[in-house]
Length: 350
Image (cartoon, rainbow, N blue to C red; front, side):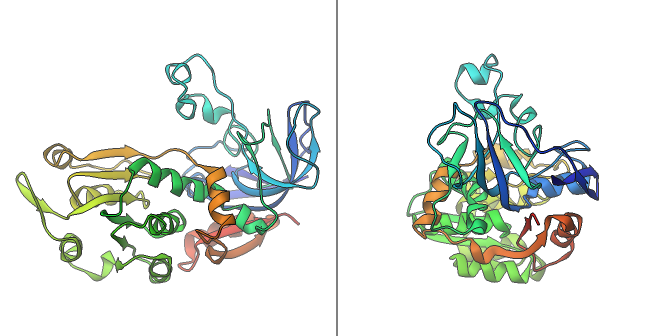
């Protein structure tokens, strides 16, 4: 089969490799569409999270073409998404049933330790329908099905922060995940949503997603003052900041973590969703003096993502801005980096 293979930073090569062979508990899927995730982009740019010879891709829609005899609940020809993953079963987190935190998770995860979906076929090891293999409803397009995983991440981020109808939320970065968080917040709905975004096109998408106010950091000399003009001024010990109840940092830039600490009110919550490529210098005093709850977000509620898509609570098809053949994978990655209009870039096997 053809596969897009990561050969090193800035270099993806199309190679002919052996088609995966399945065992009795596995499922083989023919890939219909696969999206380029932010973590894939980090790998492409900097070599993070994967190694040379890796096949990336964990946001996909694929058709079931082979089913191991021990797998039940799914049939040939159905479409699905999911992941391979295994856990050591012995570490602190496994013993406490916090499996997503097992330090061995990514050694066997689809697109990281295991071959991903940027290929003509992808295998799901130890497939269990409803746990790591999820049937895509027939009413959804292939592209929508391939967005269930990032939507699941947005849903998980919102679930972790537990917003209420009285909350003011700020979303830093209105890319794919930021846009989806805005849409999910609208379903609650929270009192007000503010987006901080430098891209003009993504700013417009943020407004259409439901952001009440969009602030472009490049168009103001004092970003904190611009936020305060909307949220009000939050006085705190030895300073003043914004009055947002929750801030979601989906940008993962070096400066945005500190921006988050300035925007949030004392006693508020900062959720770190975007993965940074470089360490940030953080004003820890703000965290202490404002008694801020800072949380990392690692996880995806894929079944809930499919549910939201099926009942049209969230929309993703318009966020797919660029489409490439699998053979043009390297150009697709470069487009996501260089094209200001790019939101979600998808690959389609020939």
